[in-house]
Image (cartoon, rainbow, N blue to C red; front, top):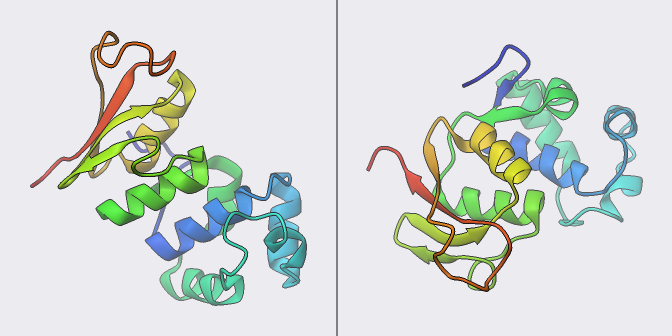
Length: 155
């Protein structure tokens, strides 16, 4: 599942990438801005404007996480707990618990994603989480896409 172009990232570095991407700026602008160390152009547009980018970049350096390659070509989480999955859904897809999906223990249900979003989610979390498309007739009228269920692979 992990292609040659996908790096493995730790949670703090992956959320640095997600928050920077949430700014809507181009990938090269994001990389140049992070390298330059003036994070304001990203933080004013990012979903989490209080994130300490400098601290996250230091963590990336310490862990050997290639955040630049992750921004250019996507990445895969090394490890991701349930709250991390929920945070990812918020950053990447704008989805929130109790509004866009329900949580039952270590399972998230009734999440509506388009086919491209499902593919992306599988790439990001597929080492540890099953992303299962439910029967399209389940929850009729809720949305135009099938419901997705996320389950921890090894419980």
